[in-house]
Length: 138
Image 1 (cartoon, rainbow, N blue to C red):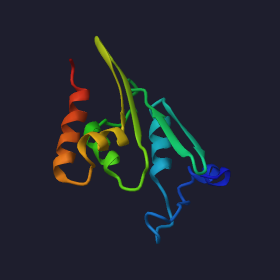
Image 2: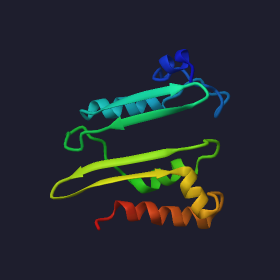
Image 3: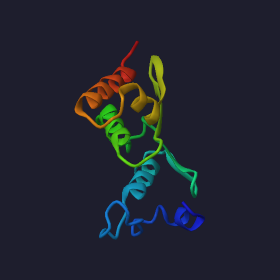
Image 4: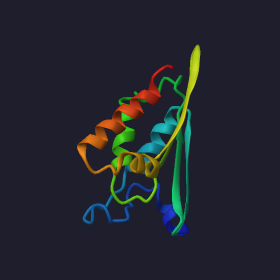
């Protein structure tokens, strides 16, 4: 993103219009920022035009306003399967009471290379199994 696009990225009434040409709002980043902030966490957005964008969010899992986690591996699978991105890196870290923390990183290009792509149901099933295995206790 250009510096101007970066400055407007958290505005819910701004969208690039690429993915949804007729849509006039872009709520993804504003909702992420709101959810992270309300739970005592925060977020950060860094981008360089032609190089890439990094979105980071952190949440205080002990905060009463922490939203339910839901199906984290399923959400990661969906994000990794999106078309168009050259690279997606998911970095997961979570402290856990009385157990080792969850701490892993997954790169779309490495997963796609290992599975021969992410365009068929078999590859997505294997990706799902792999992501769920990362969330299990060893």
